[in-house]
Image 1 (cartoon, rainbow, N blue to C red):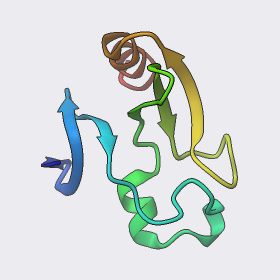
Image 2: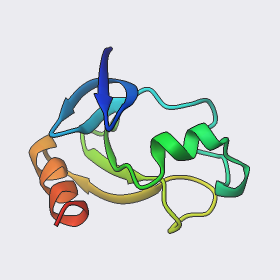
Image 3: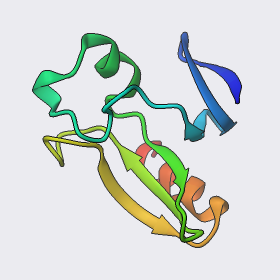
Length: 95
């Protein structure tokens, strides 16, 4: 794992491409905690911060903690390649 500084906040992940985290280390219970029950630190680091996770099936999944799912990060898409996942995030979140 490497450490990355994005917008003054520190993250650990396998990689960061254009400040998009790839396989980040997530807080405990990140995938099952409702938005209203999250620590302020979770929200500061992860709210509206899309990231990529490589799944066991070989697909790259884009996830984002937002209001689309109240109890977990939202799955935004599944892609064949890391480049496709990164391009999706750049297109959807940075234009």
